[in-house]
Length: 274
Image 1 (cartoon, one colour):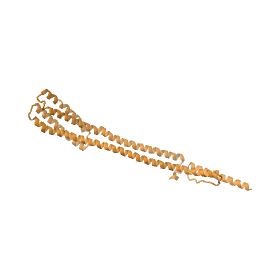
Image 2: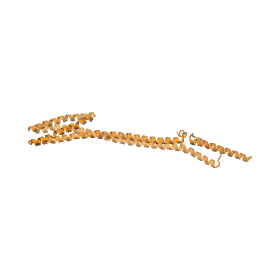
Image 3: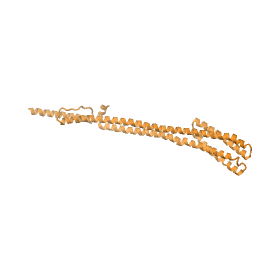
Image 4: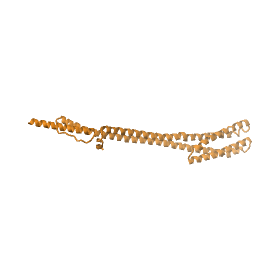
């Protein structure tokens, strides 16, 4: 590996190191973007799907409670026609608001379990509206059976309707909590992946830096030692040419220079002996 690296030009080696670092940065950025995208999808589902459904079902429960309060007052004011009709008039807007909140639930609830609970809520809604109207007619007619009807038939249907609504709220809350947990896991996993990959990249870059530095430093140090020896008067000093890069070319030039100096000194000494 080191030998192959040494045969590359120094500039190319530096560019390889720079390219590896740039690729590592891009990789970490890509993983971070992917993790944020997944997290955004999870949060988007919570904000634009799970939470609105919970709000809609709670609105249904609020209107059911309003209807219950109105129904509970009717036996008390049955002998005051004006007040009676004023209270009865509050029922229709409440029915309308319940329908307005059920309609989007029919469009957005896709799971089989959710549809099953919603269908039960719709069935109990129809029955609840029916017993409300029947009770109102009993009160208007001052029917003595209205009190018994209120505490038996009406109460059973009211409990069934609100119970189904509460069941749907619980289901949607559980789904919202699941999405929140999944979003937290997505964040934790993305964070862990980035940390592990960043550590791996750091180790790779450190190793690459060591290899590149070693491939340059060792032959340069060898050349430096050889040059010092020649400067000290030593002859016949050559270095081993280990690469074909700039340092290898410099080593060849040094050997050529050293050989010429040696030849010149040999010729000079031979001339002095004559």
